[in-house]
Image 1 (cartoon, rainbow, N blue to C red):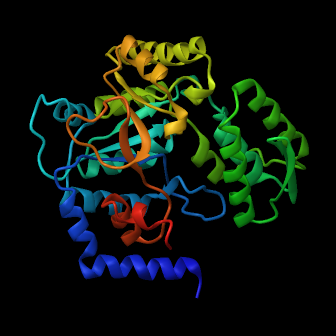
Image 2: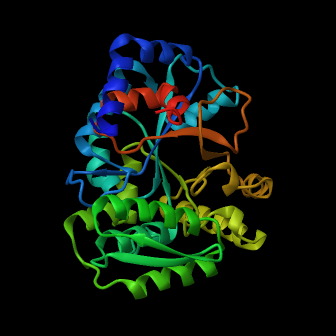
Image 3: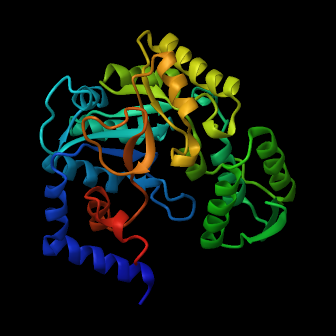
Length: 344
């Protein structure tokens, strides 16, 4: 009996026993903000990381959300959190980080089908740039498409060696390496990435699943979705983690990404999502810059729910990761799975 099977049985039992429904009711006055990244049609397990989910699972989740929550545009949720309006029980909002084209191709038609709003946070330097990848995605693609069996990287003064001979070890190596690279400044990070590239025997240039996973939106895609009711915000220009930047670098990322979105859409951009988004990834300095530049709110990736009076520049979200088990999704958004993840 595998660990994955045991987890699946456990979460199914919580769902069917009514525990998850009780947990959902206990958060009925809280605001739920969900984070998605990629929605894929290929459905293959051979080349996706855990932040991508299959389109059929996304549709199941949307149907369930529509039945059990009042899904509102983020701007209306912010009105409630600021005390400008009364929010209904079970208020929720859907967000996407990064700006991948699969959001337009796969997610947008399903959002329209179920008449559900969403907000997409754009990494503006990559929108409309065919073939470009954010550094996190570039590192992942180096590892996932490599035919090398091992990769090494100098990390924190030691040489770490990673087995990348199969799908499971590649995913573990990608997670570990990207986690480390998120802690260093961009110049040092690029040197480390180059060292990985130099070790790779061969990288497949065009693979259907690679293209679907990593291609970015075009500005025409963005405008089409905006016409269909999708809201847009900034995710910086380059997906750099703000706490690793100098004050001038951070200000440039926040100011220029905002200006680009406003120029392309001809409307104000006042919504922001922190790259990576955990406590260590942004500071009071960054929150002050956001306020000065006219951003209304900033969303973190700190797990949790939100209430009126919470810090509008550190709003909590729940990240929706790949899982074949629908009960796991329910456990996650009802707050049960985050409490249990260290125990099982």
